[in-house]
Length: 139
Length: 139
Length: 139
Length: 139
Image (cartoon, rainbow over all chains, first blue to last red; front, side):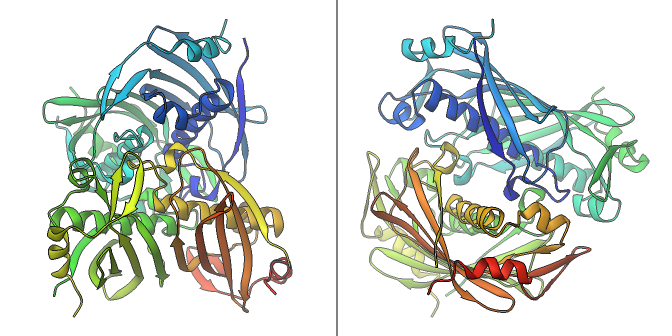
């Protein structure tokens, strides 16, 4: 078991009038690490997944604990692991740290869906993607 | 006890490649109804709160259940109520519906803080704001 | 000839660390007034245009003069008129004011395209939409 | 004279219902390359500039030519050069390419301002920043 790790810098666009990260921007960063995990760890960039395979992984549940404020130009280290893997869904644990300080802890549940003519219906996670996810399953 | 109700239209900017609302945009909408509630129901627009009173209400916890996809040009009805009111924090229940269909259920915890010279420390919810919040307390 | 007028409030999400509107947020507002103009003045909501008619109006040129900073909770009045109308494109003049003060002046050129299977190619502006646009042509 | 070059990947959050970059997202990318140029080429990260030096560089004019659509997962190469350098302002030329194809050309004018107690007034570009900018002046 391993975690997927990426670092993202807090940008000017992420900060609010109080000079700290505006929390919807954190949620964008949550999506970014999931997107990078699909592309780089599961070998399934979203462009290929959407256009060629006509599948998607919408988020159906989100829980976030915002522990400490983050500020402009800080580089946060994000890590992602798989907490639960079901036939049609996966629950991911994601946290972001600055040095030794935990800034955010999140849990996201994504569901595998077919994207056909604008319709969305759940389906089994494709075998290749599931195999990739298992390597990040928290033991 | 009453709920605070507002309607927001799904805009082009909210929709992703699959033609449905991209979930971080829903989180922006959660912030919007809280912002409108402060301005219109609690009589405390964020501009006054930040600049004159030097207080803020950052979100420390967020839970969202995304039940059904929403699409461009749908007008969702959002409602907000207070679930728990503590000395320094309030937990809000927010849901969004399209006609009879519940699209999203969320719970947000906000904390009262002093904004002094870029520092952020928790404080009691000011009396006037607390009194306004009580009217939205779910009985 | 008339202008299309809408008012939008500056929200917390629009403001940067200096407490003024972050300029990419102004560009989002430019898109919003164009979107509202299509839906309300041209009777062609983008959802219908995209899904049923398979046409779009991407922006190919943008010029903006940011004259004065705007701040949280100010309600700006936006107005839109058509400056030039060609076979396949329209150039729109848009400005935003706060009371007597002009905050922003912009010019946007949009082009009519067919959206077929992810391909994009320019086409004549459909007759019904063109007729609607003519009513906003600056004489 | 040299150009400042950075590459940014098109993310899911940047794409609209038609599967191409939504143009306000391009404007965010324009801000990002300016931000990275200040931090990495001018040795003046925006966090230091805002908090310690109390100066800012708001954008007062923006012109963009959107030449070709960009799509998810494409990595665009952005380049920035200084076109005009005045006492209080700088005009930057920015373009974004995908392989041999020019996707976007932009010109941005930024003005040096003092940020004091929420007030904004123009000032001379500080000497050290100006010296850094000169190295990117297009000859």
